[in-house]
Structures are given as structure tokens and as C-alpha cells.
Amino acid sequence: MKKNVEVRKYRSSVGAVKGVCSGIGAALFGGDCFELVSELPTASVDLVITSPPYCIGMEYERARTVEDFFTAHRRLLPEIIRVTKPGGSICWQVGYHVSKRVAYPLDYAIFSILEGNDQVALRNRIIWSFAHGLHNGARFDGRHETLLWYTKGNDYFFDLDAVRVPQKYPGKRHYKGPAKGEFSGNPLGKNPGDVWDIPNVKGNHIEKVGHPCQFPVALVQRLVRALSSAGGIVLDPYMGAGSAGVSRA
Ligand SMILES: C[S@@+](CC[C@H](N)C(=O)[O-])C[C@H]1O[C@@H](n2cnc3c(N)ncnc32)[C@H](O)[C@@H]1O
Image (cartoon, rainbow, N blue to C red):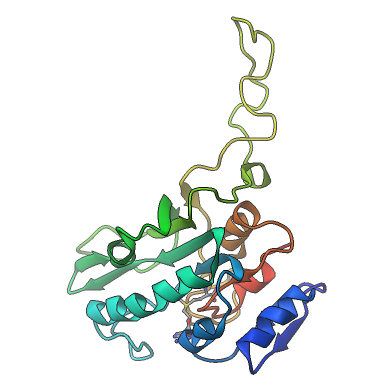
């Protein structure tokens, strides 16, 4: 945990939001996120970024079936939209439910629920690829998950310069035409695109704290930097190990 992040536990979620507003780096609410979100003020959050429980059918999961996953999200997503500020963003990261070697892409559930909702618009379906995971003999190994980025409205915050990555050929210049001699790429770097290769937090990963499905900080950090301004409020309703809470820096 970074030194400038003060974590407090609130019994009231409204208190948590006020705490963040008054300059505390992060506030934790211990409880059911449905309860938390329904108590939050309307249009109070700049960015929602989360990964809901999606290991459907596992002993520790409430959702036993894909339909349970749909039901939980039909209930939660309208509240998430309500608490998001106009111009804010909602990022939902999920994987696949695989049963008897049949794969179900869970972002389809999120997309289906939000399709036709004129308050939000899908901006990107980001592919998060990584090297480690279960080994399969009867299918190709699953080495990616997805993240849906929605904005609330069309006039939204997006700071691309905050997340540019190095150009492949940084010194390349135009060799003809009116811009001859000038850099052909943006000297600040290029757009990172919508395929993100970021190591997942497995085994001996330096960020591993024992949670089975931690976000790597780099994944959340790119979204926090691009989709919320300094001082903006970021909400992770399924915070798990707390990666989102330490990703502002
Ligand atoms: C997929 S993990 C998210 C991990 C998180 N992104 C991280 O970096 O650690 C889902 C988390 O949500 C928690 N969870 C499940 N149901 C919840 C609920 N109703 N309210 C709040 N958290 C819940 C689980 O315990 C788990 O830690």
C-alpha cells in the first residue's frame, strides 16, 4: 500500500464517498456491493472499474449457473449507471465460463444487458492477454479475458496522453511531403490499442497477496489514468485484494 493512501473502514457507504471527497486516498467498505452501491449518491463516481466473481459453479461462488450471473448483473448494472457521473466510465472485466469443454464468453452477458440502454455506449472491448493459466488437452489454452469499456454519454473524459506507450520506431520521420523531416509518430508515444498483454497475477508474481484472481495493478492503472482525472472518484464494487485502491499513483 502506498504511503499516501489512507484506508479507512466505513459502516456507511455515504460516509465512504464523503471520506474520499475530503481528500482520503482510498476508503474501503466491507460488505455486499449491492448494499453499498444502492446507498451511493446519484452521479457521484467518475470511474467504475471491476471484475465481478465469474468462476461460476465453484464452491466459493454464489452464482451456480450463467443465468445466476445474468440475474445478479440485471440487478447491479442499472445502479452502477445511476451512480456514475455523466461523462464517466464503466469498465467490466470478465473471462469465460467453461463447462464440459464448452466455453461461454461472460462479456456477452454484460453486453446483452446493456445493449439498447441509451445512457451508456460501448467504446472498446479490450482483450487482456497473458501467459499463464490452466493447461488443456482438448482445447487451446485460455490465455485472454476481456474488458468492456462503456461511457455514460458521448461527452466523456479520455486522457490518451496519460497512457501512451513507446512507438515501435520512435525516431521515424516523414521522408517526403510537407512534413518531411518531422517525426511521423506522436513523440509522446502511441495509442496502446485494444489488445493489452499484461502478466496475470499467478504464482510468484510480485503483487501476489493470496487472492485467487487479483487484477495486476498495471491493468487498472492504465484505465484509472486514462479515464479519470486527478482527484476523481474510482469505485470497485468487487474489490477483492484491493488492486484498484492502489492504482491511482
Ligand atoms: C474476480 S474477484 C475481483 C478481484 C479484484 N479485481 C482484485 O484485484 O483482487 C471478485 C471479488 O468480489 C468479491 N465478492 C463476491 N461477491 C461480492 C459482493 N456481493 N459484494 C462485494 N464483493 C463481492 C469476491 O470475494 C472476490 O474477492
